[in-house]
Length: 297
Image (cartoon, rainbow, N blue to C red; front, side, top):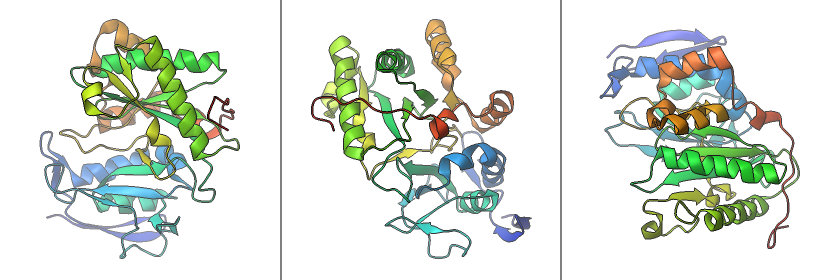
């Protein structure tokens, strides 16, 4: 297996097994994973900085064993900070991204709050998860319904693909709130959608109720739950990415009835950020306040 010694940010890194195939269906090798994370770093790092990372590693590729690491690996270099109550890794710079990619940490997940303010989420998240035979197009319909419902409350949202089969909506806050509040509001809004569109939307977690409908997963706002980070690769047959998209793209996909329009692999995403920049940037900066509903505070 090919190895290399490189310098990043003035730090020496040993890269190993560079020609190991991690995505067999497409022949995508570890060197390409490292290259992707190095090139997407300027757009991805702002969404990771200040947050404890959960790593999902696949050292033998997506068809091999995978394991979650909430605690930073014991052999990490001293310039990788250990943060949060679980002593997780934090990615602050390009060298950290390259080091993580060399671990075959294909997926990077974050909590909704920064580790410096663990009880204060910076956004409210809606994970739209389709129960077969429902699919991405059903998620697009629900996403647009949710966008319009949020607009009625004076709130804006950004949207990204999950990189798998669903969509993620995020409502940036950056104001004083709690996980209990965001979770309660997410549930209340999900129930509003389910009342308006009961044949397509469900908020109950029981799998038998989710068949053929879109589950609005409000529980992603729990203080201890993580969500796949924007621009993260996914553990899937091909190197698909959780990709920020525009609302216009959601509308066009639904009009064309072509779910493939919302499937993006690593090379697609690198082209997209050069053309569009970071479509998820409002999630870092936009200031909004959540309303109170019955049962929230």
